[in-house]
Image 1 (cartoon, rainbow, N blue to C red):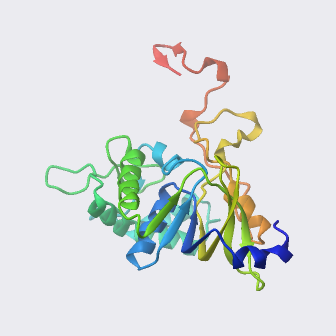
Image 2: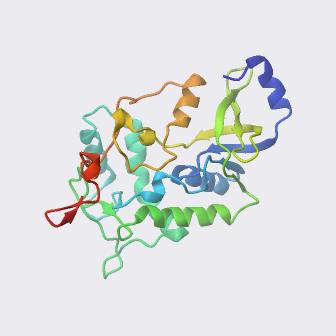
Image 3: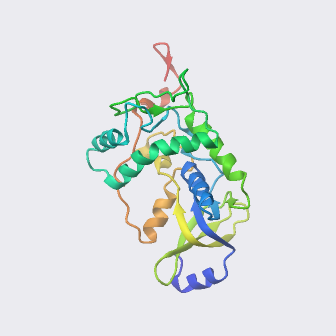
Length: 268
């Protein structure tokens, strides 16, 4: 941690000041900045790579939201709770399932072109654990479509959203009351440390799938190394579900050396 005796000095003379500091430039980070802007809050996105360099960009398939007439957020909630073996945090699942339809509409308003039926309604498909057709899609590259849309919206408002690329956050700063008051960034080009004072800080750094857990190969983005989890823990935050990692069995190849080879006429 940063020496507590020096924190006040850092915060008194920051390199940057902003209403909201968003650590991470993927889907969650961009969405946080756009939402803040709609509510009159200026923000700064600090990312260790480029804006959009994240697992969100690589996502395929679709996303689940109860938009169909025969579906409902309550059914979605029950499917998600059951799929999590009832270990989920109910309030988070409720937010996910109830906000889903509105998020789909907001993304369409921003420019996302969802796959639709001939009558103009959203095309929905079955996904993992769904009791109703619930997955909306953009062909098979939903992540790239959503991220291009969000990045355009972020970059179109430089007066409201500042972007700091190749400047990862390395430590959260706590004030004398123990509240987060910003972070220290590290410029990868100049090798300088930079202090950001912020009224609010959002950690949107994603997961840690790129750590090659137990030596396994991974298709996770290079940025998925759990930086935000470490910073939050060091600042005193409680973490949950650290023993759980999502993976797709269809993406697992063993032994790794056969990846790319033809087996029974199909690529592995």
